[in-house]
Length: 95
Picture 1: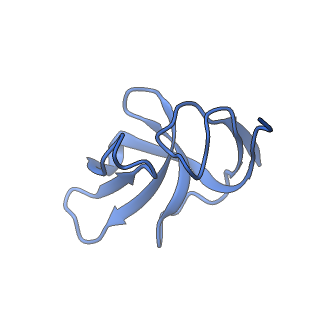
Picture 2: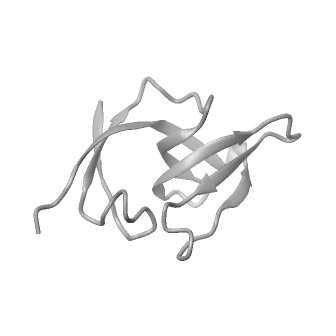
């Protein structure tokens, strides 16, 4: 288990900037999808909802933010992301 600090507001209202998420690094299979931490092709660590697109060739993943008005869903080639693990818990900031 690793902890990652959330930056930005693309996952609001679920996650706020400054929250910390627990990441199960043994669970990297997208399967039914869910919230994951990944490293994108630009080297950034991101927290997003990831869904494998079935039967896509080359394999593709839909990347979703909870704040879709800020960052709409997009589709990327699977090799553009390295899944680090599934988000299993969060600790939020007390305002």
